[in-house]
Length: 324
Image (tube, rainbow, N blue to C red; front, top):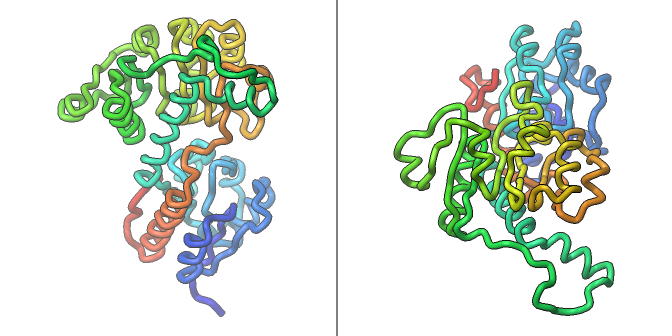
């Protein structure tokens, strides 16, 4: 009988990551790669020493307060953990870890991709061409806007936001501003030529491009509601690679339908995989299917980072990336 810890992956990972974990743990993999329902998650919690969740898993207080749980670690594959009730986990003695750092570059790259696609109307152009509606080059066709010299307003100023700022400043000559719960130190502000705004409303009013980089949760739910969306410039672009719940999608669909802002680029949604139908009908929004970290290198690194936390936990060492 194996004495290795029994670990469940709630979704399939890259082959390289799965192979590495299988060498050290008794590994169970959800091979059909569909989100596990509450009953399946409860069974996993009762039969495994650790479960490795993703954003598609809802680990609620109701689940964590069930009897007979064997798992003592929820090792999350990803940075965001608002799908896990961390307070309930703490109360029943279950540790929670995540995978920071390794997702920074891929997510920042995607934020810039969305900025470019939205500013240059690339999604709209591709749809026109594929649909056979393109009639040829003309001087005023699909005019977008340049990014150079525009003010990029970052909401949240952690690792990913700073990496996005670095790319925008040095790659596109954008000006940088930010709003965050804590002001960055002077060295970071200087290196990124970043202006701090003490008020989110002021940042929204002055920015040409808004990029969201903050966690989901009660404190940030619908942070950009109808009132705040009305503060944006008519030419402003709104980019979200953070969490879908940060934006009131119905309000955003209304703003875009009225062309009250220049456009939006979204990688995350309030009710994934469901997208507000009002957004699906519009040309002035770029919609990607939660691809922020979807490179082979990054997804493998995320799996290996989970493995590092599993190794530490079962060796009785402090978690490298503790959430709880």
